[in-house]
Amino acid sequence: MSQIRIKKGNTLERDASLKVHKKGKALLVHPKVLRDLGAGQIDLARIQNGMIEVFEVKSFAAISRIQKRRLLRSAEYLSSIFDLSCRISVIFQDF
Image (cartoon, rainbow, N blue to C red; front, side):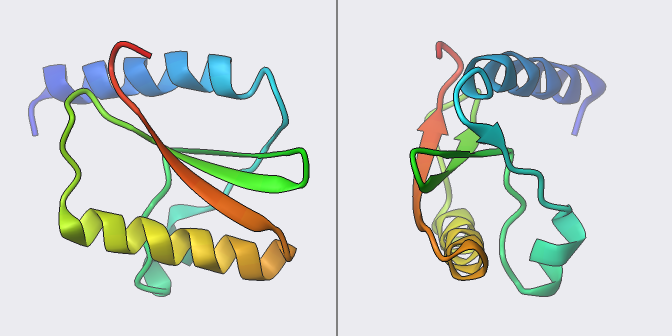
């Protein structure tokens, strides 16, 4: 992956984080915890109104079937730990 693409992804994620975390409480999960469970790393997450919201930040409108499955595992895991419902949302570049 090129340095330009990584920088662009980091910028998108930072900008989305500023907007997402204005509401609710930020939920931070170490990627190793999720990887060890065969789940997907999450870009952003928050708890708002008694619900966990997991956000995937994308610069293009494509998520692979494998990535969807891993995000679902992450959401199920977080839901079971906190005993809260969980929703997955995708934030595209023009968020």
